[in-house]
Amino acid sequence: MPHIKSDEPTQASDPVVAVTTELPKYDEIVQTIESKLNTITIEDLEHAALQGILTEFQSSIELETPISPGAPLSQPPSVAKKEIIGKHIGYLRVAEIRPSTAKETLEAFESMRVKTALEGLVLDLRYAGGSDFDAALKVASVFVDAATPLLNWGDGIRSVPQGETKIALPVVVLVNEATTGAAEALAAGLQLAKVGPLVGRHTTGKVQSIERVPLSSGHILVLSSGSVSLADGATLTGQGIQPDIGVNVSAAEQAALFDDPYGRITSSQSEPGERMNEAELMRRQKENGGAAIDINAPPLATEETSSKPKAIKDPILARGVDVLTGWHIFKNLRK
Image (tube, rainbow, N blue to C red; front, side, top):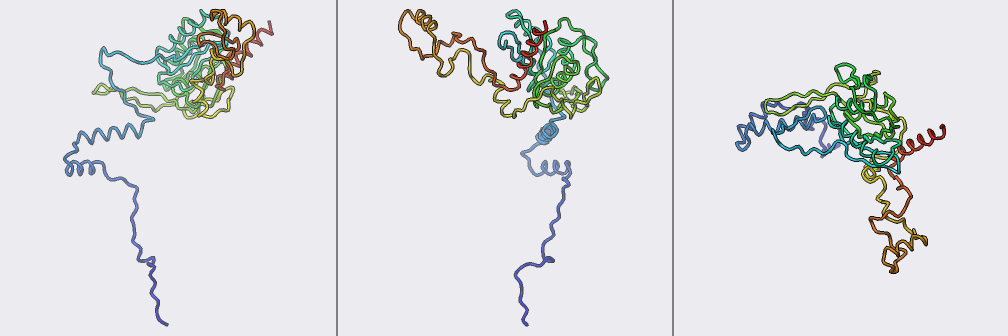
């Protein structure tokens, strides 16, 4: 029987490919590039290597650029927003925990209190961060009695420092997955001290103690390595905080409504289909010099036309306001 030759390669004839996950030596690459490519200097290579280190380990290593003496600081305020919701609920949004945050919080609170008799306060720590845990304790002193044990970021349990003024109103603290660092530690400390309920989403535990190392260039190398825990021993790093009142909302919906909690419906706009009653029609006609007006036209933008409160479409903020409103109602019922 004639032998039929197959065109398919046999297993023995397959080439053997060596696979290795080991990287070549750094010095060997640098020396080869330096000798073969005269357009790339050793300084270029060192700069690229440093950028690679900072990028690869950005969760643990950060390089702060030195600030020239006398250079103006353009840092935005730590308290990014203040508002009176409804008639008697104050709202403060903190963007980052810094040494100035405690003072800014009190100043913003006082500026709202001179306008109305506040009955509660929403402290919004969503999307807030920071790495200054001493500053977090100072903010806590606005709400918590001095000497209350609160946080430990590597050098023993630290207590709340002495504060001059206290906010003694019912407080609700808003948190979500993007509450990190010193803001996350502050929220956990306020929860431990029973200042008020945490409302929102489970935080992710992105909080670590840091060490700041000055370099000869004037830069500061910020190293994040140590864990942060509460005075009761509960670890925050990698664990996060479970809110007292959870709100089921997606990250996309949170982001969309964070800066637009009313869904772009302002009190200066009439609701679709809203029509004026006779008294309103006469008032607006008088303001228009007696001339006829279109009863379907919206009022001027500067004019308040509705006594109805704006509907909050941000579900986390709405839940926090509901808690404070119910708190006030319950207190009045017990009088």
